[in-house]
Amino acid sequence: MNIVLMAILFLLMLYIDKKRGLRLFLSLVFNFGILIVIFYLVALGFNAVVCSLIGCFAVSCIILFFVNSDNIKTRSSLKSISIVLVILSVLIFAMAHLSRIAGFGYESYEEINMFSYDVRIDFTDIAISMILISLIGATVDSSIAISSALYEVYENNRELSKKELFTSGMNIGKDILCTTTNTLMFAFLGDFMTLLIWFYKCEYSFAEIVNAKTFAAEMIRILFSATGCLIVIPVTAYITACAIKKAKPEAENAA
Amino acid sequence: MVYNVVIKTYGGKVVLMKKIILVIMLLVSAAALIFVYNDDFLYSRQIMKIKDIETVSQDISQNSLGLKEEHYKRRIKGVITNGSEKGEEIEMIYNETYSSVVTDKFRAGDKVIIDGKDIELKRDFYLAVMVVIFIDLIFAVGTFKGLLSVVSVVINSVIFYCGLYLYISGGINLLFLCVVEMLVFSVLSLLLAGGANKKTLSAVAAVACSTFIMLALLLIVVKTTKYSGINFNEISFLTVPFEDVIVPELLIGSIGAVMDVAITISSAMSELIDKNSDISSKALNRSAREIGKDIMSTMSNVLFFTYLCAGLPVFVLAIRNGFTLRNYIASNFSLELSRFLAGSIGIVITIPISAFVSIKIMKRGAKAK
Image (cartoon, rainbow over all chains, first blue to last red; front, side, top):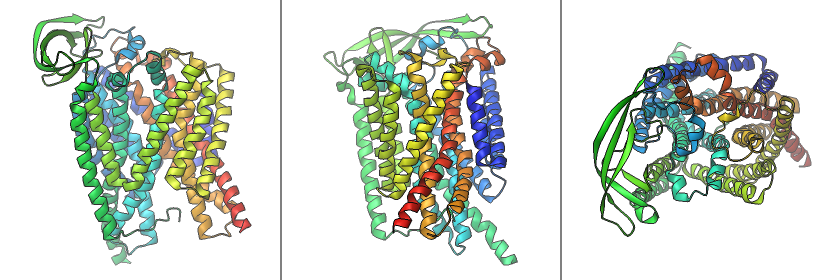
């Protein structure tokens, strides 16, 4: 079934744009490869947080430089994404340790009862790296949207100062915000559906749902993804504005 | 040309108002956090604040791969903070492991909920912290528009939950409910995001068309392939027949992305028609595709990572239990992959559909004038 879906997706992507579609499809294959490598290294016992940070960086490079191209926009995006990753990993580290969302909740026991639990790998790290990996896609998405739109604004209006560029970046950010939160929320709701049905059938009370590890872990994951897209907006707006202003005066002087 | 952004220089008044509201929001958030931290009296179960933890015994077990796992038996002492026995000290024994696959590591100062012999951390405070950080940030970055999107998310979740209620207690077909829900979601969120105008109308129409095409496509694929290659053990928390939930899950997962694409394309189209009302349908179509290229690459990546990383914990557990990489990938990841594929198909399909729909709707409007 997946192969059929994959074929449909590939054809549709080619229909929209041949060159770009092919690149995109290839990049997804690469990303899948990187994801599996990260997963495997983590499973072998390498530090999960370090692995996933490196992986996130590699993935952003692929999305930015392979699917798009190497230019001032993608470079400022990469810079902003790295900054956001560093800021967020501190927060995620604290939150994962405090809220004890590592491992599996009661609801998943059936799924994992065929395994031995004596695996000697700290699942807190696994939880952290899961949150990191899940936010990278959304963060790259909003970052590239802002930097390319900002560049477009500058192209059409070259007299803008750094501060005005930043303000207009924030305005673009507002438009992206609503749609990105929607995308993320529904993606998770699709994931959540069986869990919610479970809560219903087993007559969980509100207090039980809120404190359940399964629910808390998912919620924290969504909220971190959304926070990633949020923080990246001002960071990208600022860095892109600086980069454009720094690169352009020389070009103008030369001309 | 596509990104026609007007730079708004806000008047001083608006900035001041935003600052005042931000301060108020921060105060309210602080109050809410303090309340949630001390809301023990709302619980019917007993809650204990841990004072002291000591290790009773410790041993090491080995699994079939020779991995040594440390197990601890610990005794916690704490004070009950709610109910009739408030203030009394109690002691409990619990197990802890190094990996904490199914156990938790507690520390002094934690509040835990006592459920018979089990204890569960009181996590509501941490959830509240996350929600508060998110809402304050979204206001700081997106002001009122940001808050509006939170409102639409909340309303949509409530509708979603009501839909599930109808399914479970009313026995109404879940797929039917989901399609209806999706139409309601799109009308609501797009109205809230864009206001009642032609842009919103064409976005809603595009979402509706894409939903039905997606639905038909998924049903055809599912019927012809008979779910081959999907490992149903992977659907966790399954309490109902899987045929009931799988297509609705795939659909609901993609609707957010579909709405996102529809609104982006239709607002770009309306922008173009506004700027040049004589623009030909062909030129519009070309620009739509140009925008579509940009969206599809980043959007499909959002879905990719959001879905696929959900498989990490089970993957680690399996590899650490002696599964080989090939075995595991062949038998797992199938569901996450189909979620991602369905979502991406939704995104890509919506690009031409919303271009077509918005050109039809807006061009007709332009002629009527």
